[in-house]
Each structure stands twice: as structure tokens, then as C-alpha cells.
Image (cartoon, rainbow, N blue to C red):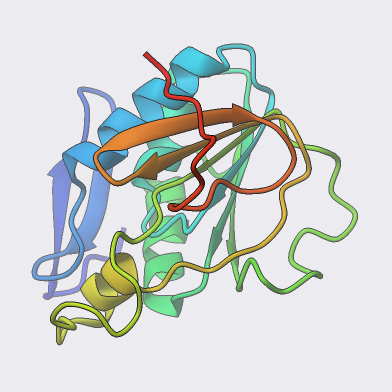
Length: 184
């Protein structure tokens, strides 16, 4: 497996390895907590959609925890998508995980797909134009852009601020949604 000089190959779990940028957006506790809460909230999920999938940290953790699920991960940043494709191959998950390069606001990205049982996403926490924009493209996209779109139904689980919102409804949870239910 090709590892570029600006990347590292790290242990994600006892069974999973992740390729990530040495100085870019790194696997973090929010990804682990989101995957844990998502698997706990919908343990029988077969069709899973991961929005803003990045290099695939949440996807890999869900695929390990939910062995019957198939997952589509949507990522807008080509460099993250490349990492996700390589991480799928590295961990033998390419038969159950389809990383897609595109913007979830593009209505064709999920055209023809059946409804998903579980939708996850860890949206950036700061509105565009607020805070200091990191020089690193991965970090900037992970902290500042919050694309919006529509889900197909099922359970939506998103990391919102310091907590989670698990909402069995159509659509995506937006960070400012006041009626989101917390998952204990």
C-alpha cells in the first residue's frame, strides 16, 4: 500500500489501520464517539451513509462494529477521498464501503439510492468566516464548511457542538436545530 512521505500509517483499533496526513486532519475522539453512538443507536443498520466521510475514520469503525452493514461515504475533498479509498483497501473493507467523491448538495450524488438505515456526520463546528482559518486544506474543511442537504430517512446521528443528536426523521441535523434529541 502506497504511503506518501507526508502521511503516517497508524493503528486505529486492534484490527484497523489508518493512513492519514502527518500534519493534516487526524483521527480523533469525536470520530470514535460518533461511530460508537451511531452503532449503539442503530445496531441493526444495513445501509449506512456517512456525510463528510473524510479519510474514513467513522466509516471504518462502523464497518467493524456493524459487520452486516454496507456503507457509502461522501467526501468533497479529493485528498481525503483518496485516503478513504486507500484505507478501504488497506483494511479489506472495499467490498462493503464505497467512498464517493462529491458534494452532498449535488442531488445526483445519491440518485437512485434506497433509503439509509443510519446517516452519520461530524459537521464542522465553526461557521465559514469565523475563527482562524487553518493553512492546511484538510483542517480548514473539517473546521469551517458545513454543507447542507437532505437525507433519505432512518436515523440521523451527527456530532453537534459537544454532544450528539440522534433524530429519527427526514433530513440532516443542523448544528442549530433546537429540537434535536440527545442520545444517552
